[in-house]
Amino acid sequence: MTSTPTEPDQVDEPELPLLSAPSGGLPPVVTDEAALAQVVAAFAAGSGPVAVDAERASGYRYGQRAFLVQLRREGAGTALIDPAALPDLSALGAALEGVEWVLHAANQDLPCLAELGMRPTSLFDTELGSRIAGLPRVGLGAVVEELLGLRLAKEHSAVDWSTRPLPEPWLTYAALDVEVLVRLRDVLAERLAAQGKLQWALEEFAAVAAAPPPTPPAEPWRRVSGLHAVRSRRQLAVVRELWSARDAEARQKDTSPGRLLPDSAIVAAARAVPRTPQALAATPGFTGRASRSRLDVWFEAVARGAALPEADLPAHTPRSDGPPPPRAWAAKDPLAAARLSAARAVVTDLAAGHGLPVENLLQPDALRRVVWAPPSPLDADGVRAALAARGARAWQLDLVSAPVARAMAEATVETPVEAGTDPQVAQEF
Image 1: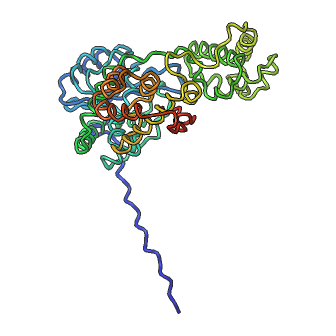
Image 2: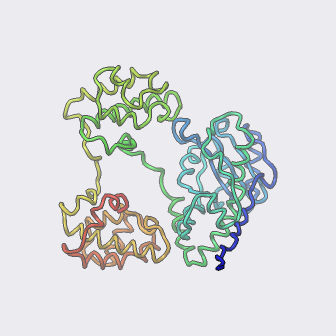
Image 3: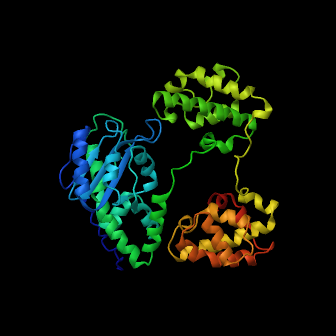
């Protein structure tokens, strides 16, 4: 009788330890000027970098303002501050001037912190640093597991942080987010240094800290999800009118626009252009209580869009001072399409060789603009100057200027341009 070999017993990976409570205990939430003054004094006297985080009520409230600010610094401990009660934190910002801030995904938190009077002079972004280090997952929980061997509970990440009073489990979650940031910064800095990328990361962090406030989009209604399904200019006018009506209502009620009317309902109404309130009520997305309660407002918006003179209808594509979409390059300028294909291949290969996401090696918009209107003469110095004018950092210029210039100069109309015209590539480059 022949025996059948058995599979070796599988050994389960030991579960990483879970951080469940702040090391110094959960501090009380700071809600008055006297307590804030104590926090300012403590953090001014602390040492080393300061971990900073903010919680917003995205999906619940209008806008992106902060509803909780968390900080931790050696010698000062952890502080949880209620910006709804204390909307001016400029004194705390001043106390931390010259101190390195450690944040995860700084671009998400810096605008709402700036509204409170807090702006870093230098920072270390553990999310951006993780990208540059080539980590496969860059969410805070994943990075903490990878680099610190710890687990962070994330079950409260999407709660309504405008709730008052904030439940203790939520506050514990918020305090733990800053508990690990400085340790994470140190380990990540070591990894970046070992990879020869620390200076790259520091240049990126400096650019984030020095960046001006983000400019609001000229036509924010074009960010409606599913807008690609809207074909005619008349339908786009309905989208614009519905978006504007929803935004005004949301601002007045201090609620997330999507809670009043989902994007899918706006798109459905724009495609159907219903002629009566009853027809609008039968349109997908208008069956919820919030959308039904303001049906008159939504129908007036649809009617405005339907009645606009032809000359006032929005354009099919947004106004732009940049080049056309890459998918149109082959028809408009075949040589430019060939240059883009060649340059994109070079940047993609360089990024892969250095373990970087492509967009962190070079911003796609900067590459497109320089390729569409190349410098003269078309050489490494010219490309370097053109990319620098578009915001590329020194480390990026050192890596890409010469090979991109060479690829552009050698491109011909016979160069394959599929990569430059593919819709997915168009989103990236």
